[in-house]
Image (cartoon, rainbow, N blue to C red; front, side, top):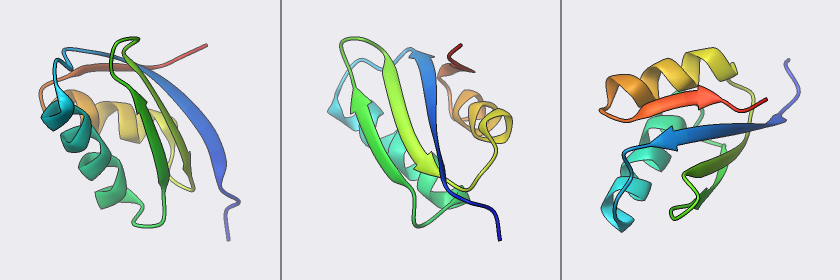
Length: 71
């Protein structure tokens, strides 16, 4: 089984708490046990998850936000 790891995303387009919750839902759909924290003003999302970063970034982008795994 894959170990959970912390992945940090840069997410553009989040403007409110509803956006932050939408991003959390996208991540938790891929990994229901993910621990997700959103810094709305900074456009930063941190997730402790077993899912792959690239897969999650693509899912967040598909949901209408511009997401990338932060370096």
